[in-house]
Length: 176
Image 1 (cartoon, one colour):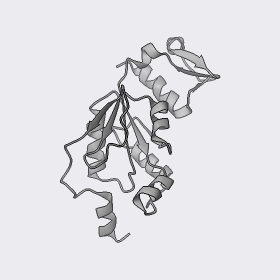
Image 2: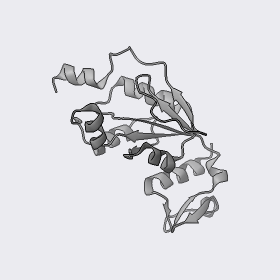
Image 3: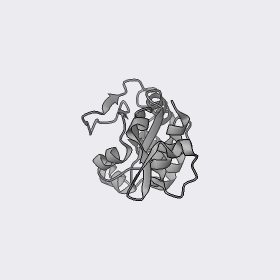
């Protein structure tokens, strides 16, 4: 994998396009094309890296999360993690998250296998348009809720001690 391509792709995700004033060397500039005032990796360079997307709430980080992220990272060059929005957590889980979405994003991004964590979009299709992953990885206990042509979908079968590392169980045990 080309480290320069990886650097540019991550810069592109962090900034929703690489700003025109970004300090780049000429070799990096030659890998980019300008669109709407920002720069993006040319298709031929983007194809040199395999981008894996996974996601979750990550309210209380535990060994199950770390295991799943490690398994996802093994499948590509770049691991992008979508962290669920607080609003989505309340809608789906029917409880307020223990930690804010910004805190959860920061904690996930500190984990070794994660190249970049992003706050998820309300519409998962928009996240796919933004990241353009080559693969989506779901944890063993996650429902496969989106399948898209041209993007490989993987549902992990392996996990750490069935049911022991589940956020709801930990919250219940802590009495939160």
